[in-house]
Image 1 (tube, rainbow, N blue to C red):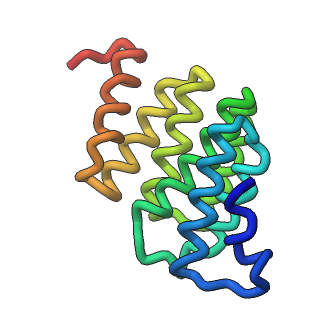
Image 2: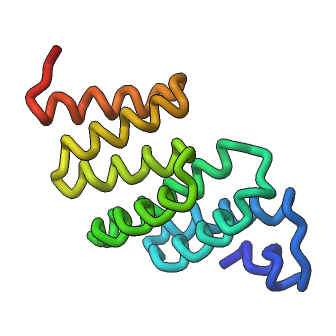
Length: 145
């Protein structure tokens, strides 16, 4: 991949500001190339450095890339397990609830997805995508009020 020479493994050291962004870009490129496992591994590298990431949007991208890599490979159960384990360790991470909700919804568990979308909104009430997704999952549950 054209980005390989920029990544920390090629340079032998890690610069958080620069390299986390490059790992996320490489994960996105891998997703577009349908290299789901490689994308997931790069996104995991970003998530391992969550405490070093000042840009919240970058962290949310990494969560979505992990989820997308499993959903596209029809490995929904793995995604639910990963996010469940992550939530156990980080119970206030709204993005993890959001992504687990997407996986649950995709897995056909609409009510469980509504519960996770609701928890994500409790933690981050201004997230429009979560609110919209929650509404769609509620419709799937037959709750129109």
